[in-house]
Length: 175
Image (cartoon, rainbow, N blue to C red; front, top):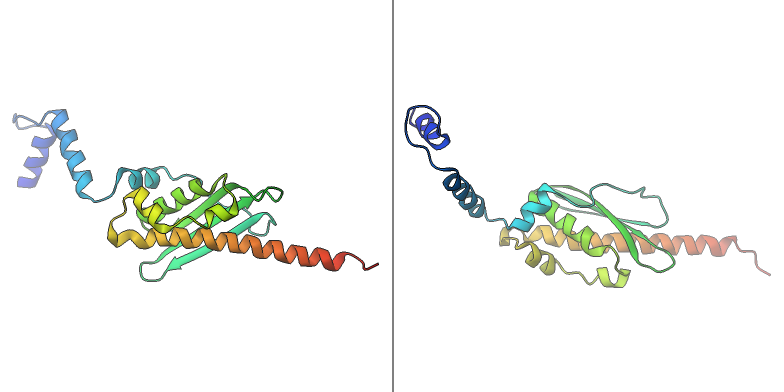
């Protein structure tokens, strides 16, 4: 009963009691959001993830990295599409099953790899992602997954490229 009365007071419904003004309610909500421990960038990338989706993993210009953390159950798939002529990553997609920090780390990773050379993206460190998102220590494994997914996608692309080159060599008749 007390909880119901407090809720009514907060919302300004019934009872003839004075309600909190709207700015006070907004301030209380902001304080409650900060106590959660997540930076606004994490919340933004969780609520509005960039580059969600996938490419056909069999495409020759697509590299796929799938990584997971058995301890927490997070699984991350990150794919890159590479311009074969320049070696530049022209697009990236992700699908992540996991917490908000894992989704935010995936989203940031796809934004950061777009437009960069393969050599540049393998230099992206989990500490940079974690710092950008202000991840709490208990969520650092999410940024580690993102780094691992980037490296796995690059490795997959390079392996495909190597197999394609070998196939083309075998198809060329010897003089």
